Length: 105
Figure (cartoon, one colour):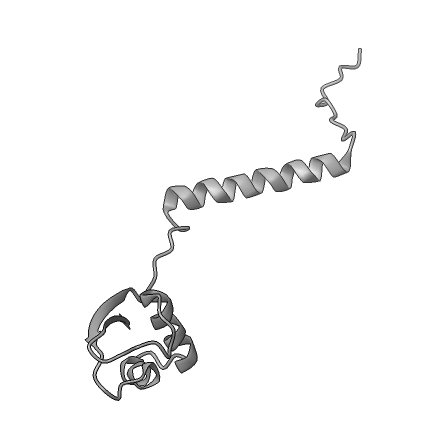
Protein backbone atom coordinates (compact mmCIF):
# COMPACT_ATOMS: atom_id res chain seq x y z
CA UNK A 1 0.00 0.00 0.00
CA UNK A 2 1.46 3.31 -1.11
CA UNK A 3 0.60 6.36 1.01
CA UNK A 4 0.59 9.73 -0.61
CA UNK A 5 2.27 12.06 1.91
CA UNK A 6 2.75 14.89 -0.52
CA UNK A 7 1.48 18.35 0.23
CA UNK A 8 -1.42 19.68 -1.79
CA UNK A 9 -0.30 21.59 -4.83
CA UNK A 10 -1.47 25.12 -5.39
CA UNK A 11 -1.73 26.38 -8.90
CA UNK A 12 -1.94 30.00 -9.90
CA UNK A 13 -4.87 30.65 -12.14
CA UNK A 14 -3.63 34.10 -13.07
CA UNK A 15 -0.03 35.13 -12.64
CA UNK A 16 -0.99 38.78 -13.26
CA UNK A 17 -3.56 38.82 -10.45
CA UNK A 18 -1.09 37.20 -8.07
CA UNK A 19 1.59 39.78 -8.93
CA UNK A 20 -0.84 42.67 -8.46
CA UNK A 21 -1.93 41.19 -5.11
CA UNK A 22 1.67 40.86 -3.90
CA UNK A 23 2.55 44.42 -4.97
CA UNK A 24 -0.53 45.87 -3.25
CA UNK A 25 0.17 43.94 -0.07
CA UNK A 26 3.79 45.14 -0.03
CA UNK A 27 2.69 48.76 -0.52
CA UNK A 28 0.18 48.42 2.30
CA UNK A 29 2.80 46.88 4.57
CA UNK A 30 5.27 49.70 3.86
CA UNK A 31 2.59 52.36 4.38
CA UNK A 32 1.41 50.89 7.68
CA UNK A 33 4.93 50.39 9.00
CA UNK A 34 5.96 53.95 8.02
CA UNK A 35 2.87 55.35 9.71
CA UNK A 36 3.54 53.39 12.89
CA UNK A 37 7.21 54.36 12.96
CA UNK A 38 6.47 58.00 12.07
CA UNK A 39 8.79 58.01 9.07
CA UNK A 40 6.34 59.88 6.86
CA UNK A 41 6.16 62.91 9.16
CA UNK A 42 7.71 65.81 7.31
CA UNK A 43 8.82 68.88 9.14
CA UNK A 44 10.46 71.85 7.61
CA UNK A 45 13.96 72.76 8.66
CA UNK A 46 13.25 76.43 8.07
CA UNK A 47 10.25 77.97 9.72
CA UNK A 48 9.46 81.53 8.77
CA UNK A 49 9.44 84.25 11.36
CA UNK A 50 8.19 87.62 10.23
CA UNK A 51 9.87 90.95 10.82
CA UNK A 52 7.68 94.03 10.70
CA UNK A 53 9.42 96.75 8.68
CA UNK A 54 8.46 100.42 8.50
CA UNK A 55 9.00 101.71 4.96
CA UNK A 56 11.16 104.81 4.84
CA UNK A 57 11.60 107.29 2.02
CA UNK A 58 13.82 105.74 -0.70
CA UNK A 59 13.18 102.12 0.31
CA UNK A 60 12.33 99.61 -2.40
CA UNK A 61 11.25 96.03 -2.02
CA UNK A 62 14.33 94.99 -3.97
CA UNK A 63 16.66 96.75 -1.48
CA UNK A 64 14.78 95.36 1.52
CA UNK A 65 14.73 91.88 0.03
CA UNK A 66 18.49 91.92 -0.60
CA UNK A 67 19.06 93.18 2.95
CA UNK A 68 16.88 90.48 4.62
CA UNK A 69 17.63 87.61 2.24
CA UNK A 70 19.70 85.44 4.58
CA UNK A 71 19.33 82.13 2.76
CA UNK A 72 20.81 83.37 -0.50
CA UNK A 73 17.50 82.78 -2.30
CA UNK A 74 16.85 84.16 -5.73
CA UNK A 75 16.05 87.81 -5.01
CA UNK A 76 13.10 87.74 -7.42
CA UNK A 77 11.57 84.81 -5.47
CA UNK A 78 12.08 86.66 -2.18
CA UNK A 79 10.43 89.85 -3.50
CA UNK A 80 7.54 87.70 -4.75
CA UNK A 81 7.15 86.11 -1.28
CA UNK A 82 7.08 89.55 0.36
CA UNK A 83 4.44 90.76 -2.12
CA UNK A 84 2.29 87.66 -1.58
CA UNK A 85 2.60 87.86 2.20
CA UNK A 86 1.56 91.54 2.30
CA UNK A 87 -0.85 91.41 -0.65
CA UNK A 88 0.98 94.24 -2.39
CA UNK A 89 2.89 94.76 -5.61
CA UNK A 90 6.57 95.70 -5.71
CA UNK A 91 5.84 99.24 -6.91
CA UNK A 92 3.04 100.03 -4.46
CA UNK A 93 4.96 100.63 -1.23
CA UNK A 94 5.11 104.11 0.30
CA UNK A 95 6.89 105.74 3.26
CA UNK A 96 5.21 105.06 6.61
CA UNK A 97 3.73 101.76 5.45
CA UNK A 98 4.44 98.63 7.55
CA UNK A 99 5.13 95.33 5.83
CA UNK A 100 6.10 91.87 7.00
CA UNK A 101 9.28 90.26 5.71
CA UNK A 102 9.88 86.53 6.22
CA UNK A 103 13.03 85.71 8.14
CA UNK A 104 13.99 82.04 7.83
CA UNK A 105 15.75 80.55 10.81
